[in-house]
Structure formats: C-alpha cells, structure tokens
Image (cartoon, rainbow, N blue to C red; front, side, top):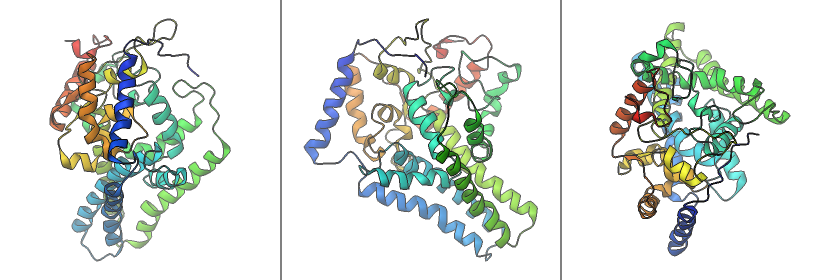
Length: 368
C-alpha cells in the first residue's frame, strides 16, 4: 500500500463536531441513518423505469422509432440504478444488514460494472485519496482527457473542452467491455502494488459479465425483429444515454473550479487532515433541485457523501446545511454550485484550463 498519510490534526474539532451533530440529528428524530421508505420507493421506481421499457421492447409490438425512444428510457433508468441503488448499497449505506447491501449491490453488476472492483477503486482508493494524482483512479478516466494539472499534457488535449462531453457518452461501453478487465489484470492499482484479487471475485467477474451480456445483447438479438444496424444503433443509444449522464455527473464533484488537487510531500504526507482534504477536493451542486436530489441520490451532495459514506443518500439534503454551517464556524471553505448548469460550466472551464500545457498548479482554478 501507499504510504500517503494525513497527519495534520489542525481543525480536528471540525470533524468531531460534524460526527456529534450527525448523531444528534438521527437520535433526536428517532431515525436510522440507512434507507427509509423513500429510498425503497425510489429503488422500485428506478427498476421499473429500466425494465418496463426493456420488456416492452422485447414484445416486438413497437416501431423502430418507438423502440429507440424506449431504449433512451432504459439508459436513463440504468444510470439511475447506479446513482440511487447500487451506489448506496456498495457503500453499505442502504441497510444495516450486510446481506441486503450485498444483494442490492449486485445491481451494479447487472448494469455492466463489476461491484468488487468498484469497491476497490471507489470506496477505498477514491474516498481515501480524493483528487491525489497518481493514486485516485477517478482522475484517469481516459487517455483522451487531462483531468489533473499534474498529469502529462498531450497536444490534442488543448481541444478537450470541445470533445470531453462526447467522450463521456462512451463511459458505460468502456466500463462494460474494457475497464473492469483492464483493472483486474493490472499489477498495480492506485496505491496498491502487485495486487492479487480473490479467486472468487475472478469467477464473479466473468459470470456476472456473462449475465449482463446475455440480457442486454444475446436475448434482444434473438428476440427482436430488427436489422443488424438497427440493433447496433439501439445498443449505442442505450449506452450513450447512460454513459453521458453518468460521465458528466461524476465529474461535477471534483474536477471543477475551487476544488484542489494537492500532492503529498517527500514523506508522503498530505497537508491537511483527511476531513479537511475532503472539504477542499470536493464540491456540491444543485442542492435545492428536488428532481436531481431524487434521481442522482448523493452525487450532487458529494461533500456529505465523502464525510458520511455509510449514511444513505436520502438523508443528505437534510444534513447539507449542518455541514455548511459547521464549515463556516471553523473557517473552512464549503465548495458548491447553486445549479447543475453552473457546475457544468465550471467543469467546462476546468477542462479548458487543464488542456493548457502551462496549467501545472495544484490549484488549477488559479491558472490563466
């Protein structure tokens, strides 16, 4: 493992106060920090949005254009399952019962992504070493993109603010057919060196990928009365819809203005404590947008999610003001954009700045 540490105890009281207020919030209301009826209803809704149109497509009772519309809905539902069901379950935030989280976490695999590898790269690496170049795998989504001022610059990346959003549309295709296999076969992964994955996880990788390919490709190909090119278009539209949504939303939490990308010193120490590091490397957006709060779960409340990854995302809107108030009390910056459009524009400006070879500062938003 990497020797990167967060030894600075300055502002330790901030995180202590956060934990104290968090416990008081749930205890005073007699609430569990896990999922409640709202989350269960959302889970049912996301599964319905995905699999009802999928079933309708398989009936062959619709025209190609109507099926294409249904495919778009399937893609929206797939992204929603990833945001609102599998994400919480993989973090152990959905239920206090591990078997419930494991079962619901399988929906991640049913959407084409390997749950075990997600727990390694996201739960452990990204949540511990957020925005640290060379460690956080979320900063290396594609060789086409430069998402860190510390990454090597390639000439064509000066145009990345023009093509990045199009590239995001390929994210689920890459995930389902390349990314997981690539990570499983890599010797080094983030801070892990010569990593060896359990034999059972190798088996699950191939078995669950086969299940995913079966219901998304094999069964529709055998059942649908469409030409091969119509079938290919349908597959691409499903992936482009889900990939575009997922790709953009995941970038709005960390690769935006005001977030930082610090490097450890020669001893492997990060300047701030872990909690302060999370506050400086993470950003919220559109906190008052009720639809986004419902659809993308905790993805627009990334500050709260990084501080409380085992708390169900359904509670984040209520906790957000508490975190902001405590941050102000302790003189800690609280990064946030009022709307999703504001966050998208900020990400666009960051892509443009990072596409500049002269952008090498840890705080890229200060780069001209």
